Image 1: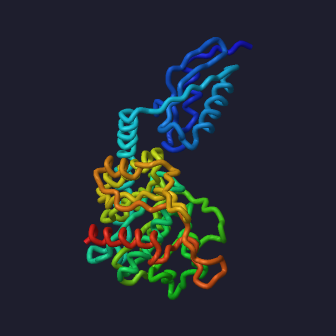
Image 2: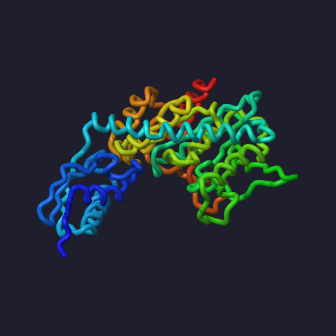
Length: 375
């Protein structure tokens, strides 16, 4: 049976294809353009944020599959890159779409907090603790590595520091720090694990080893409140929170629970990572969180023998993000791994840089800058 292909049917099919970084469908984002129909053949142009977008081939294949499912015998996908002006306009549009959701979550958050019988000491008006949220637009940019090493660098400067691993689905802080013990529970109070001079709590302590967390938003929000309500943190100068990537429910819960928090954004030099990180920055601005600055992770790779720098993820992403959010690029951290011995060695931690290494010194400088900006 001959199936008539129309632009309307094509657009409906493409609404089922999501751009993985921007978390919306191709039609809403206006990334599928110049659709042409030649009998049972479809030709269209697919727009990308950069020429080397990591999901490019996968997205093209999804488009081809979706259109063949509605009767196309042949699908040709041409590709182009959005201009700087179009990227700016798209970023602004995404921000606007998040505003209403943010307002709703803030309203819900105020109601939830007002229903609490006792405000945790850490969140009381008398608390002197300064909150620093570490955020990113996407996973895989080294946000948790920055969290851990910044917290340890702050402690090396003499500060009393706590860390909440708020990346509920992707908790990794305990493993990065080489922590194997679990928090103590005494008289229904939880005492955080201490290592490298910091106190730390994570969802990873409350699930079976490497088991998935299959919870919905309200349950996750309650767990975060419990991290403040039921954990005995003592007196802290800084609380550093490793947020989940993106702008989902958990990140929104943290924003409404901690209106006084300041935010540090982590990106790689890659244009796509910087572009999606701008959404996290927009959330911070719309929830009245001050942005401390940007950390560009994996900024380059330095050859151990010749000391030549190779910019394997490109250049300029951190600077572009900082300029877009009217803030500063505070640090550029090279790609690498600390030399901490072998797993099983006493004191082994796979992601902590020693204070006297070049990267450790970069985190020291970052910590000192953060301390000045949070006085």
